[in-house]
Image 1: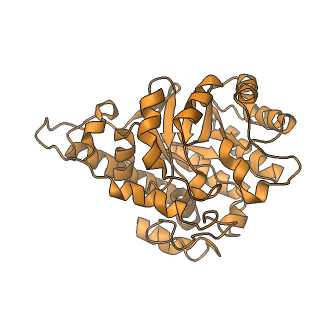
Image 2 (image 1 turned 90 degrees about the horizontal axis):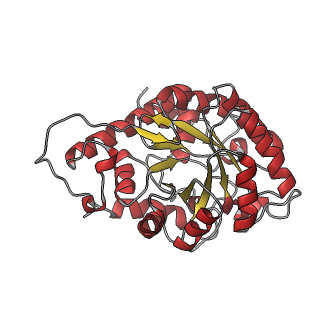
Length: 337
């Protein structure tokens, strides 16, 4: 399959919210919640995408003509490129009833492993969402990153026990999910956590822990204080708060503050290997793409994941070569125009 064929196939089974647009830029879905849209005016998702397009790279082809290495190592595990599939839960509600969470993860997790990357898996108000994700990771040798929402202590610890049983070597929490409209007022509750509360959770996890949903230098330093091994610079695709900056806009300052002390990932509107290179030049270590991988699964199953990943890798490698760098460690801020 080509990626265009994957998009066309996805349009036959996605919806009613996601349109599997030719360019996933947040404009068609806008503020459709629940669904892949953003909160309030629905402009933050579009702002995320636009910010990456506004950044330009400097070419430099007066250099050695050698092979490009896109491999990335995270907590002792090596991946073919610094890209991960993002955590998505309740896919039947948000993206279309062709797949349940179990069915989605049974495709995504092994497909990512075969493509040389890994998937962050989702969580939701329905406890079977996280259970299905943990089961899929366990069935694939623990290769995946179970991502839990900021529930109350007892619920969190029970879910972390499930994550441990999967054999996963790292866990994550989308701390900003406290702002999702459909998680408010639930039992168990989901809400913000202090650095001290997070430290207890991270210590209980016992493996490298990534906090997703950091948008400020202050927040990054709090995550470091709590013992997080990594952060994801993320505004949850605009789904948790209206009127906030794009991830590309806040990434450089955060990287300047904590680079080298913890892993820095970023998501939000990243759609190509060119965007990945821009993110790394601004200080990220790796990138997360969520909605494109949902479209890939809905439109092409395991083949769709491979096609998208191969395309991202080829775009990243080509961009690196045209900018005169041959390894990820050579990518630097001076490549930004």
